[in-house]
Each structure stands twice: as structure tokens, then as C-alpha cells.
Image (cartoon, rainbow, N blue to C red; front, side, top):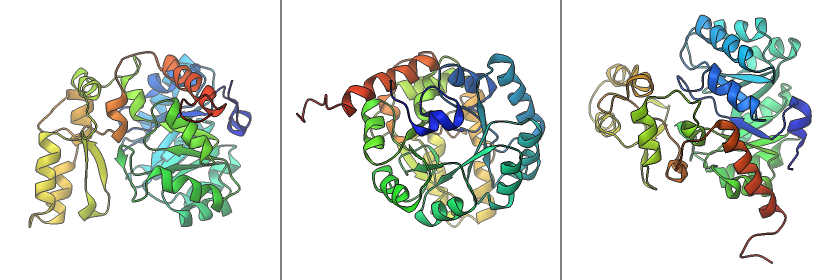
Amino acid sequence: MIKSVLCEILGIRYPVFQGGMAWIADGRLAAAVSEGGGLGIIAAGSADGDYVREQIRIARSLTDKPIGVNIMLMSPFADEIADVVTEERVEVVTTGAGNPSAYMERWRNAGIHVIPVVASVAMAKLMTRLGASALIAEGGESGGHVGELTTMVLVPQICDATNLPVLAAGGIADGRGAAAAFMLGACGIQMGTRFLSAEECNIHPVYKEKILKATDLCTMVTGKRLGHPVRSLRTAFSRDYLKAEYSSMPDDELEALASGALRKAVKEGDLEKGCFLAGQIAAMVKKVEPAADIIKEVMDETEPILMGASKWVK
């Protein structure tokens, strides 16, 4: 069985994180992933502290394994949630869409492992200096907020820039992707889109069906004009938003156009006004199964590849 330093640091069986997907990664999904041997992560998204506290306690009622919380730092509730994770003593905090420097010392003093998502070498070096426990190098193939560099390019550069353990994220859905991540220098992986098909993932049936029927060219990136590019499935909403983005619509109106769109997708399956976040590997997700089976399947596929069982290399 594959082990890595991450397993030792965090007390998990497999070096697999579940991505912090806003309105998707709730306490139930996080608990299922942690019970399956990975690290389940509750997404704070744009929710308030009460919601996050509730989800943490739901996860705690379902598992005694370590759990994490992902904090989107551009959220208006970021300060509030920074306090909640400390009070609830979660084992891991991952961060995205911003710089967590203001919170690092507080979290570390509370015994929390801080593992920021980074999309550049400069941010990786800063987080290393500030005492992060590990880093998540996330390429632009991922769903949700994305950077410019691909996983193949980003991961080895981050690994060269830090002495911390690095997880690879973006475009990973099976053992081949995981094996590639390890060969690039990572010691673990984070998957988001693959867990959209987990039985414990409580997205609307329309959303789940769109993931299962996705094709290789099913995603697109919008939001570059406002400085916050986002990858999602091609829908009526995403196409309309892209047109608006390159029109004369004022920035505040453009921002308002996307307000609540993810929640409409997750909770209502609204194809006209919902934003269905997904990574480029959505086309590789073909069945609904328990989160624990997803983790085991990926890890079981990875090991023989790393041991030289590729049909192309002898």
C-alpha cells in the first residue's frame, strides 16, 4: 500500500485529499472521505461561521478520523470562520482565493496543520517561510477558481521551491494521474471533481448527471475580466456569462450576474442560472460509488504503475 510522509503527519491511511468545493463539500461528504482513509475537507465557500460549525459537528458525529476545512479567503466571513476552525479544533485548514498570512500564526498555535493551495512559486515560498505544514499545487485543469499554470508544469516547480510536502491537484481522477503526480515530486493528491460522483456527495441529481455525461471539451473558463477565473461546465449560464464578460456591462453588474449561481446549480440543478463547477477530468467520471471505493480504486491503480507495470515501459 502506498504511504507517504503526509500519512504520518496527518494520521490518514492514504495520501488523498478531497477538494474543498463550495456548497458541495459538506460534513457528510468530508466524513465519508475521512472514513475511507483520505482527508475529508468541508468547504466554507461564502457561507457564514454558523454553517461551517454545523458541518464540522456533522462530520465529527460520523467519523473520529481527521477532517479539514477549506477557507476561501475572499469570503466576507473569512475572519469569522478563522475563529470557528480554531474553536472546533479541526486538524487541517486548507486555503484558497487569497493569502492566509494574517491567520497562519493563530492556526499554528492552535495545533492546526495549515496547507494552503498555491498556484505560483512565489506563493509557495511565502507559505513555506510562514510555517505551512504542506502545500497543494493546483493546476488550471481543476474546477472552480483556477490559476494560469497547468498541473504538469506547476507541481515540479513547487516541489523544487520548497522543502515541504506537496500535494498535486487539478486533472487527477485515477491511478494514472496519481502516479504522474508522484513522479513529478508530489507526495499526495487532491481530487475534487472525482468526488462529485460519490454516493455521499449531496449535489442535485441534474448536476451529478451532467458530470456522468461529460465529454472531454465540456468545461470552460469565465471570470478573467474580474481577476477571478473559474472553470465550470458549459451551460446556458456559462455561455451567457462569457458573452457578458466581453460586453460593455459594468463590473459590478457582471459580478452580480454570478451571485448565487453555484448554489443554484448545487441545490436546484438550475441549468439556466446555475454555475456547475467541474474540472477538465469530468469526462473520466463514469459511475456513482461510495467515497471510500473511489479512494481505494485510485490508490490500487497507482501502485502497479509506480512499480513499472505500464504497458509502454519495461
